Length: 309
Image 1 (cartoon, rainbow, N blue to C red):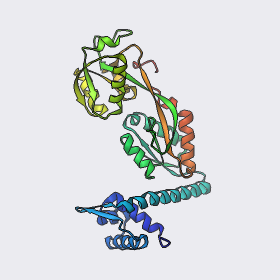
Image 2 (image 1 turned 180 degrees about the vertical axis):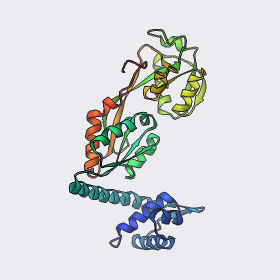
Image 3 (image 1 turned 45 degrees about the vertical axis):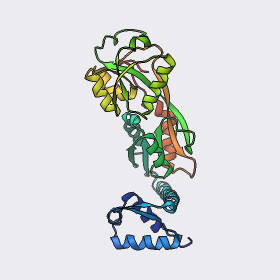
Image 4 (image 1 turned 90 degrees about the vertical axis):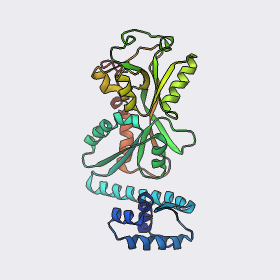
């Protein structure tokens, strides 16, 4: 193990993502034989097989997964050191890779733009994925920091709430209930309801609310993803339960309406998620401070196209 080099760890990490020696060689700008030689040397140094073949694609073995986590941690710390030294020398710069869950993507670009105005010499990358994937990226040092809801208890991350996340009952614009005040839950009983797919956090949230109201609704349609649900609502297929962040454009365009249901909106928290291990680069540390102080303002939404929730 004492012979391991940073170059071996870098190639190993790229190969784990690329899945083949040819793809890794192309990504790294080196020859395929060079990739093969470095990986043979790495396996000899580790003393265990690091890959398992699945057709043409190679995936890390058990030992490979263990090495991959540590390799990415080492490479991430080195990148942070290089960025920190560069910032000390130039007074600016650095790179931030932010991961967000799909609903946060409706406002995360505005957050990055506002932050970039304070750090004009820096570069940014935004990746979007389901919560489990975002947490995986964070654990494997593939992103610097993340934004999502409260993580499950077993996730080894720090979570700091910084903004409220309202969820509402939405309907097509002009729906008979759209102009009414204090709509009772019982009034929704016979409305065709569009449910999110099984396993969706939004669906679980709605089912919990319906159980609390002892209400059985007309769940005729099940669809995947916010955009699909919005199109179905606007087409008059039914009403649905959605994050208010997802419908801001449609509210302003008078294509959808939020029903004034008693006790709504229901709130969750937006959280800033970060690894507990290691020291953040100066840019990442500045971004964390910015999110905690300004994130609630950027993430604010409106309830009816005019009034802020």
